[in-house]
Length: 456
Image (cartoon, rainbow, N blue to C red; front, side, top):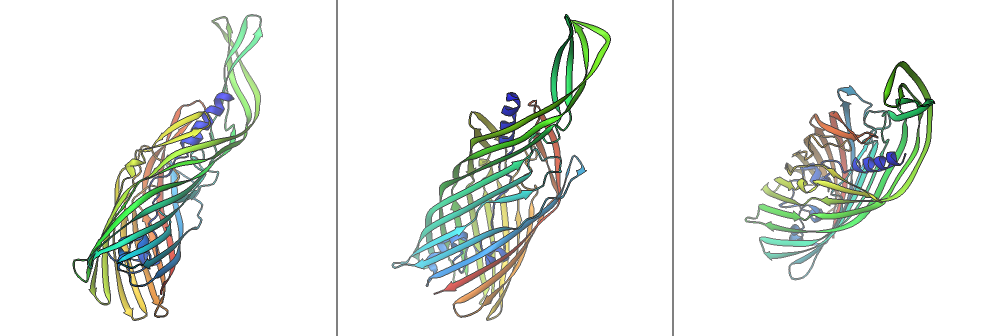
């Protein structure tokens, strides 16, 4: 059983790696509705996320608070076998922003927002419950920034990013696997019955890996306004290194009836015609509680965008994001004396967005946008913690002017994920590697959002 426990600890930690493409880009109802294309000119305090250099052009104190709700869903198969549908849940992403103009063309900004996260729940009755049953990752960034308007058409900004992250993964180790035991019984003087007996579906184990950490990165940004109606923005976000610490818990039992046919041996001589069938009960309790840790790098990224005020009532924008997901090449896990390196082999990817906004009335603006988001995950080093596939993101929204200083924004985003498949590798109790083809179909997400903006 000690050999089994060592393998279980390593296997559970290994498949607890972060899922591919776990970036969160939904930072405001207005920005969501415009496909994130507000980098060159944001127009409100959410510039603390999209481009803090825009704060330098603010003429009064601005504050914004809002929330985006995320509802993911997908069908899936394992080796072409249909599975129970992924359980659906709502995940809330709150945001808060503050911009304060200072003397001498400086401005102070603060943003509280989410850059990364995921949540999947498959339940217990599916073929890959040994890889993932339920996974949740929560992350919050706190980012104070200082911006400076160098000229009437050029500004810069910089500041730290304090990142808090919490990760939890639950699974059923060795779900559906068979327990094999080698048997050597003395049945007569000098005569042994030798062979292997097996107990199908003997593992009834539950594991939980949970931890959290604070990390620090930084950002730098700039805005150029070559004309009164055109603005360009550029934002660099550094890598953030996290050393997540927490606990690993494993409990349950290994039980069943092991049966098999044993051959008769006298020394090394096989005695034909004397095979016997044996049956024995297996029942062993398992309970483990140990400290655990993992090293995770959140990737660096570069965002560029342009915005154009076509008329006083009509505005358009475009943005492009490059993310260095290849830096998340391997996750290093440690559970007390056991260590493991989980290869991911992700790729650097791009995200493209376009959006528009039109003032239908003085008190009502209509918005729309589209974004294409590439999936960075590797086809041959997959994980079931997040559905695979590139994403098409269609969004719309409304902006209401309630008073001269108070605005209310609504947004709705629909994400459609391309059908795709990944190779999932799962360790057996004997340390062998089993491979499955996991395919996701009909993947989508609903993302309604709401934000209040106030200008002092």
